[in-house]
Image 1 (cartoon, rainbow, N blue to C red):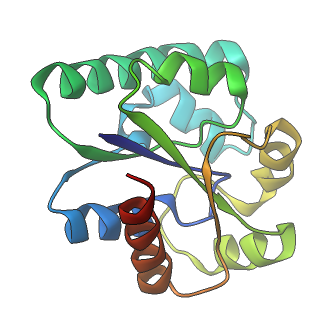
Image 2: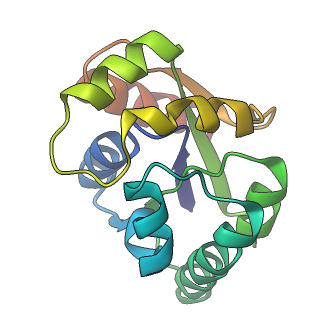
Length: 162
C-alpha cells in the first residue's frame, strides 16, 4: 500500500507521515524534496505555484510511487495533493490511498508562523486553501490532536479498514 498524507502546507504532512511510516515499518517519502529549485524559490518569495509549476513535481512523485508499487514496497508519501486532478495523477494503482489532514485556517496559520526553516511561508496559506479541493475518497483526520495521536489514529483506522 502507498499512503499519501495530504493537505495544505503546515497541516503536519511530514511530521505525521513520518510517524505513521515508523509505526508501520514502511518507507517515508518527503514529497517536498521532489520540488524543482524554481518552485522552492517561488514559494520562498511568497509566490503561489500554478498548475504548470506543479506538473514536473507531480510527475516526479508519480514516478516514485510507480516504482514503489512495482516493487511491492509499502510507503507513506507526504504530498499536498490539493486538487483532484493531482490526486488522479498520483493514484497509479488501487494500492494508493489518501489521508487528508484537515484543519481550519487559524490553527494551521498559527503552526506555520511557529515553525522555523521551512521555505513555505504563512503568507501562502490563503492560496493553499483557495486551491484545495477536499477529497471525497480519503481517510479524513483532524489536525487538532498531537502528531503522535494523529498517527496512532491513522494506523488504527487503516487496520480496521484493510
